[in-house]
View (tube, rainbow, N blue to C red):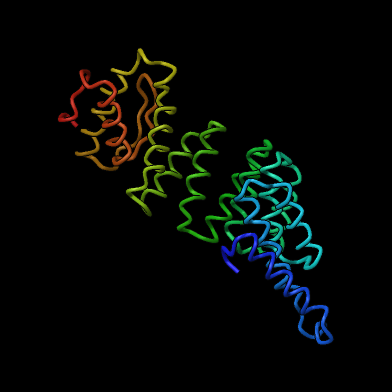
Length: 250
């Protein structure tokens, strides 16, 4: 049934419903495949920019098969596109209740919780998605961005670092960690301190080269950094202020 398009999903639904009405329909137990078809049609309608129609089809799928978690996820997406975030929250919650081991369900729930101001609930849901699927990079990225948005900068940095160990070339993770480091160093708010921040980073790299276990230190600003993070931050700073400290010094 995957990616059949709206016309083919419609035809699949028509044939299945005809079979269900046949003399042998009751013993065929077609509720699940019909609900699957309606959910697929809802997904296609959502991609086509028709969230209201998608919501209607997903709701019909749930009416046919009330424990079909996929239909609740599609319903949740439909509500989100319609701006009905509280309804979307309820749909995604139900999806996680029906399929508690589905990491995507928890990540979707977390996104709606974040959007509706349920910050700590969102953190817990993102972490549940990662617990179920430890290499779920999308959940790491979303969790890191959420932590940064609620000003839990150090936790955001730690989250991005963990994910970078899984996917060292991921551009979104690299961008996220640089933004988090910039926030931690308050470069955006205190640009006049930038030369001193860069100098401190250079000193920290030198210290860590001799003593890898050295802990973060306080100077004009607190620099939360592992050796790898300090180096990335230093490269970032050197690009935006190349005349202050050369990259070669790092």
